[in-house]
View: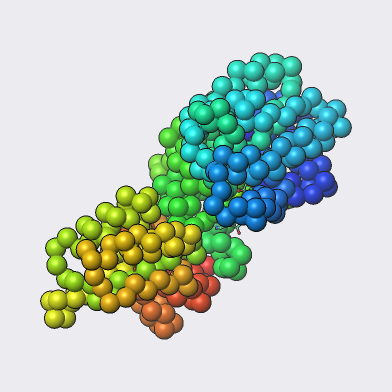
Length: 406
Ligand code: ADP
Ligand code: ASP
Ligand code: MG
């Protein structure tokens, strides 16, 4: 007998028929004698619809009310799945975040889970009851409903698995595992049997939405056995494992991309000490996260261009911050460009292999793709490109690093 957490994403519960399919999958585990807690997302498209409703009513909104609205999609699916399970003769009940309770901080819209008290759920395992828990939501330290950020049900599932000391956390989704690149744009992407927590963490934070970044962080910290697999086919999925569990490391394990960033260039800014400190200090004070940065060498020693990236949704705020710096930091113009994509390669093998960046740059150059900004860390290299090259760049790098499926 094992204790399992099974998480089903939006597409997996996207219709009544699919909810019934999920119930069958849960029943199979219950019939095998396992204790099961299920975490579900809202039906696909529902959370987007709710987010739009909020913006239609108020563009500058109270984040606490936003959470009340956008968390409601999961209330529907936990109820429906519990009913579908009961219909199959399985004892089941729904749990909203506050009922469990899943306690979070009060950062509405992007709350972090602080503690889950699952004593009652465990008690009911003895009566063979399945716990059907709403993903994405919790109860804040201000005693109000919170949400965990988009894609947050993955984090709900991993956190619950850690709290329940579950034997495994299975993330059922619309692809049958973690691939070397998003299979939707890289047709030659190959499914991985295993991937390390570290690599998955990089891939997720660099755009691979198959798992929310925070969920991988949490699984790594609490040693939760994590598997990603298909809701629709009975196929083995991908296991997220420790580094020691992978015998041979590929130099590059995956290619990923994100369109969530925008580029901002300060043209002809004075080339003297203190400019970068002023610009990035002011942005940090305004809670605008800066990711990539490049400063060109000035030809005349007087002025240079300073380029950086911020979240696409934060461009307006960044521009307002820079406007206020006028007088302190003068430049010819501030030019925002949202039409960029960050493409990254990730792999543990990079730590011991030289020349990876060179291969990346050469492959892109051969296709005539211009690199605007570069950033690297121990196990990744990211480049900023014009958005129109997204697919071409991902596919080119996938081939260049020998990742194409046979
Ligand atoms: P869910 O609703 O089940 O949470 P998501 O849409 O959040 O599903 O995540 C699954 C999607 O992640 C896939 O449909 C796929 O397009 C995308 N994806 C991005 N990168 C990868 C990758 N490397 N491997 C697998 N899927 C990926
Ligand atoms: N329903 C939420 C979202 O769409 C949470 C999730 O699906 O993980 O972001
Ligand atoms: Mg998701």
